[in-house]
Length: 368
Image (cartoon, rainbow, N blue to C red):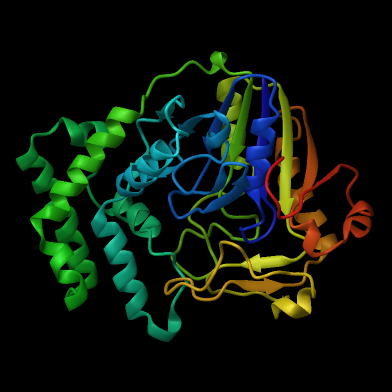
């Protein structure tokens, strides 16, 4: 069975969606698109003949017919799932796609998201640059409280469902203290719970916990974030709460029985970063290259603020890719390639060629 692992080589935003969608489009058989890690905070954007897509809760191969799988490492967000599903349905994309999930997937509530945003606002000048989707709060809550999986939650009657959500709300009130005025209506409104309960039921109805991996000719693991975002286990700037390299995919590949593995490390010819945290090679966009355009999808937002640019050290890039890839040594047979996106914004392929034998290149245009 063929397996591809699409890995961000830097801080994220390298173009993993474009690479995933391209390999899906040209696959010779049926593809399973695995959302390896992270959650709905991801935003993988692609441009096709049918328009542009930004995938958060779905794999970037979805628009080319790939089925989706959420492993236990992925954090579900029923609210984002419904919004994105409805949009993809209206565009005729999702109708024939099958969706599968591990029963052990953690899931975020409106209170995880609001708590994330409130706590980030309270940090004031010491913000972490969180995207406000509640990923850290969900993980911490699972470590600190009694939890249930989404099937157990959906099996409860409405009264017990609301009581469970109230325990989550109470937990966050102890963490936060006074709820800011602008959040109080959504925080205490019964409609927030009613809407979320419907979203949970919708997600459960549209996803299946049982599937046969033998039905697929190719598995594409689409990672979130990038190798330079460390998993520290703490909520601090410049980190991610999941393994961003080959680690999780390796565990799944062993379970699936994959025997033909390609690792695809994705980079732009320059560095980018969302949020705060260290960025030694940061520079103004026009300093990076006069050809670097304003990014099509990454702009200022009130949580992560400005989209940041920087110079890329290709030798360091090579070293961190090798350090990650060698985790497969003596475990699975593999090869790896460098995937360079946004090549129309800067030509450095000759420099990359000094360190990498196998290179694919992409520009910023639509997937052909």
